[in-house]
Length: 95
Image (cartoon, rainbow, N blue to C red; front, side, top):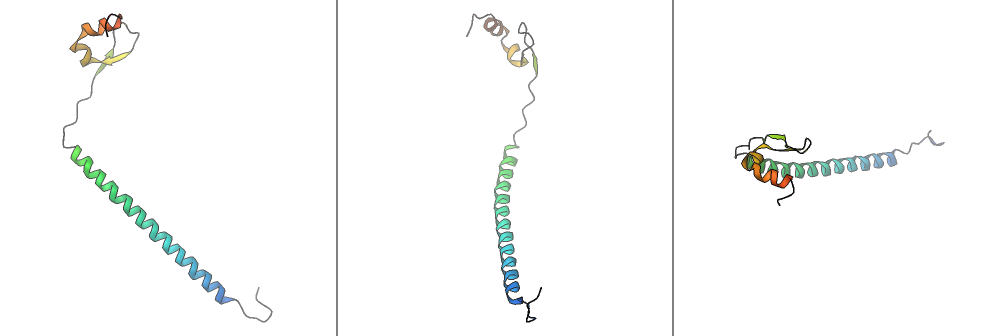
């Protein structure tokens, strides 16, 4: 694979190796800066999330099968608050 004169083209291979290494370093540095920028924005999102978590969580709303609807589910607290409105709406006489 050498030349007929016995000299290997080492200089060209070295230049290509150095160039490939420089490209790899530049790509790694670019990825590092990109990921660090993403990490910075997610840490501020986490800070906002922590501030939002200061409020106590709302209790889960219970549901029930709506009477006369064939199995449709509604929120129990809304029904118990005004059952007359539910039945008026169900029979088409209300809003």
